[in-house]
Amino acid sequence: MKDIFPLADKLRPLNLNNFVGQEHLTDKNKIITSFVKNRKLNSIIFWGPTGTGKTSLSRILVNELKFPSIEFSATISGISEIRKIMVKSVEVKKIEGKPLVIFVDEIHHFNKHTQDAFLPYVERGNIILIGTTIENPAFKINRALLSRIKILELLPLKTKDLKSILSKAIGFIKRETGIKINLSEDINNIIINYSNGDARRLLNLVEIIFNVYDKNKKIDKEFIQDIIQNKITAYDRTGDDRYQLISAFHKSVRNSDIDSTLFWLYKMLEGGEDPLFIIRRMIRISVEDIGFADPEALKLCLNTKDAYEYLGSPEGDLFLSQAAIYLASAPKSNSLYITEKRMKKIIDKYRNVSVPIHIINPSNLIASKKGAGKNYLYAHDFKEKTTVMKTLPNEVKERNFFIPNEMGFEKKIKKRINYWEKIKLILEKKK
Image 1 (tube, rainbow, N blue to C red):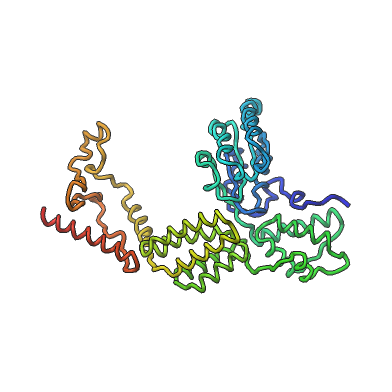
Image 2 (image 1 turned 120 degrees about the vertical axis):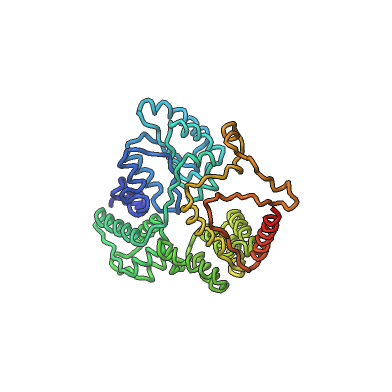
């Protein structure tokens, strides 16, 4: 019998036409397609969960564009090896007329010092760096290097993508071995649900099924569950379910419903959702739905992120419960959210207004001659710590951009705003 395993390697797409999923990157006129069409390439980090196509897309770009390349694994490659290749990259570019593509799998395993070795060669255009990572690059990649690299996020594969890959796997096995694996729609759904957006996980399961099932018997649900050896959750992290559940969680917090908040939180966690995905939403909630009503909410969410990253799962999941309960029970205010929408309209209306001359710093001779800073009033020079000096352009007639409510600490913010308005009114009458 032919060697058909590992399926994840045998079925790896060699060109963009055979790649499945990530349409936000690979559809017509999207960034990956544009790279191939225009025969150009930039340094990239592919960020996303396992089994979503990071390595495949990296290799496809190199193959389609015919760039000289070399692969590293950050788990086994050392700094001395990298430095030798960096020096050689200068010569490669002279010979090939193209920069050397350095593909680094799991780049997050390189420490910041090792990452520094790439930086000057990326800046000079001697190499194009393509990295893959399951970790958030903002926390794992050198900031200077990050500023010179395009981050492309890959999402868990959708159900339709996994169905396509499963079909390809079954077809490949039949062509190579003559054996057809018959799977009912229910079994397909169990396999896809178990895969949790991960094509590699799906293909590994298909391998096990092929190796252990009795070719003369029907594959049933009991057989599949016996192979999986764990409870298959109803949570599908492959698209609609993911965003419906995070939305349900968000709305439950906004509605101050603690039971519902915890239900949807654990529905996601037990389904295998990335806790950092949930924490990112909680950080947003802390400002969009709570804001100044309880400024401590944002601090707690940021601390939750740090604490979870320190401990990881399952121990760190408890931090998410703490943050979720705090957010749901906190006083609520969407004043900041409303202000944001209001300000975008205001700025669009007054896009071309200039800064009033009296609050421009006279930092150079030309500005000074134009009257920059003339008649500027320094608030700290006055006992009231404010003045009647206008700091908005005259063209802007609207006022009260931020309107606080009476909930929690925001009530104090409202008192502070009213205090300054009262002082300014008194000073205006004294003029």
